[in-house]
Image 1: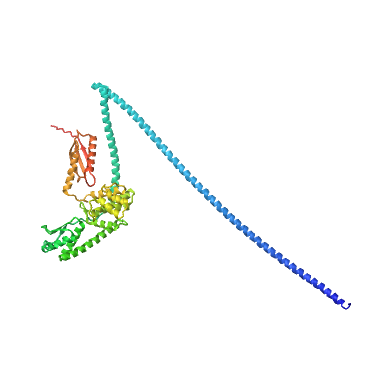
Image 2: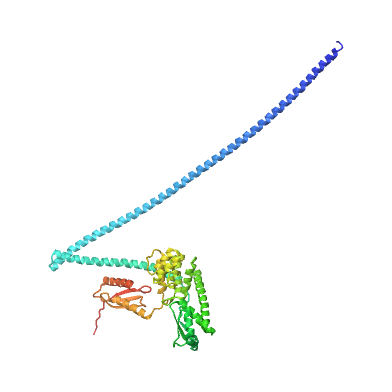
Length: 514
C-alpha cells in the first residue's frame, strides 16, 4: 500500500494539474468566445445603426421631396388664382372704362337731343307766330276770314315742307351716292389697274381664204362629191359662190367650224382631195382639236392657279377658245373676269381662289355639248353641280344674270366683273342696227316724261342728256324726272355698263339792242 502511495499521490496531483490546465484552457476559450460574441454583437449593432441611419435619411429625403411638391403645387395654385384675379381686374377695368365711355356718349347725345329739342321748340314757336302773323296779314289784305287764311297758309306750309323734305332726301341721296361712288370707283380702278390682261382676241373664223379660184373646182369635186363628203364629215355647210378667193363656212358650233377650217386647210395644202382622204383628214383633225381643247383648259387652269377642277369643266374651259360672245372671245372674257374677281375679292377681304374659280366658270353654260332651253347661267350652274363644285361657286354662276337669288358674297363680285369686262371699250362688237335702236329707245323713254322737250343719247349710249321746260319743271321735278328715267332704263332695257341720266333745266333771257 505504501508502495503505491507515491503513485496515487502523483496521479492525484496529475489529475489536479490536468484539471487546472483544463480549467485554464477552458476559461481562456470561454473568454475568447465571449470576446468574439461581443465583437460580433458590436458589429451587428453598428450595421443596424447604419441601416437605421440610412432609412432615416431616405425617409427624410422622401418627406422633403413630398413637402417640396406640395409647396410647388400650392405655389402654382396661388399663381393661377393671382392670374385669374389679375384677368378679372383687367376685365373689370375695361368694362368700367367702356361704361365710362358709354356714359360720356350718352351724356353728349342727351345734350345734343336737348339742344335739338330746344331748337325745335323755338322753331315751332317762331313758326306758330309766323303763321298767326301771316294769317292776320292775309285776312287783312284779302278780306278773307281767319279760317280761309289759315287753310291757305296751311297749304303753303305743306308745300314748303314737302319741298324742304324733298331737298333733304335729295341731299342725303347725293351724299350716300357720292360716298358709294368713291368707294366703288376706288375698288374698280384698283382692280382694273392691277389686272391688265394682254391676251390676243381669238375670234371664230367663218371665211376660208384660198390662193386662187381654181382650187374651188377641186374642192367641189366631180358632181359635188368632195364638198358633200366635207359637209357630211364635219357637219358644216361649205358655201362656194362668186366670192373671190374665199369659201364661207357656216355652222353654229364653233368647234366644228374650226375642225372644218383646219381640215380644208390641210387638204388644200396637200393637194389630194377625194372622199376617202377627206374622212381621214377630218378624223385626225377632230382628234387634234379635242387634245388641244383639253390642253388649253389645263393651261388656263394652271395659269390662273385654280386647283382640283374636274376634267369635264376643264374641257369646257378649253372649248371657250372657239366661242365668241358679242364679238368677244369667251375664253379671254372668262380669264378677265376671273382675274378681276380675284383682285376685287382681295380688296374686300374674301377668298380669292373661290372668286377666281367662279369668275372662270360663270359662262360655261355657253359651251355645253347638250341642247337645252335653260338660260346659260342656270345650265352652267347645273353642269358645275354635276362636277362637284362648291355651293358658293354654283350660286355665283347661276346668279350672275339675276336668274336666281344671290346667297354668297362672291355672286355680286362675279356679276360686277362680268359687266366690267363686257363694258370695256373695244371688248365687244355690236350690230349697228341694234346699237341704233338702243339709242332711240333711250331717247324715247326720256321724251315720254312730262315737261321734256329734247333728249340726246351720247357717249355710245352711256349718257343721256334731257332738256326740260323751265316754266313747267322746277328743280325738284327735274330731280324726280331724272330718277324716273333711270328706273325705266334699268327695268326695260338691256345695256352694257351703266347709263348716266342728266336733266338740264335752263332759263334764257334774250334782248336785242338797236
